[in-house]
Image (cartoon, rainbow, N blue to C red):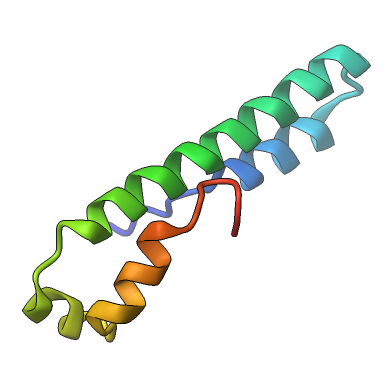
Length: 77
């Protein structure tokens, strides 16, 4: 059985398409989605710092590429 993982953006699209939500609720959901995206970026960039050179090669990155990506701030895509 295949399970599809939905991103926070997919959840936002689903919620806003279902019924008319109050503006404050839409704003709260959008803020929650942005915070979730930022947390994911931070977590993955921290994990990237921990990878060995061999693991980096497995995912197609050089240590220099990983360093540049890991140094990026979480609010930058």
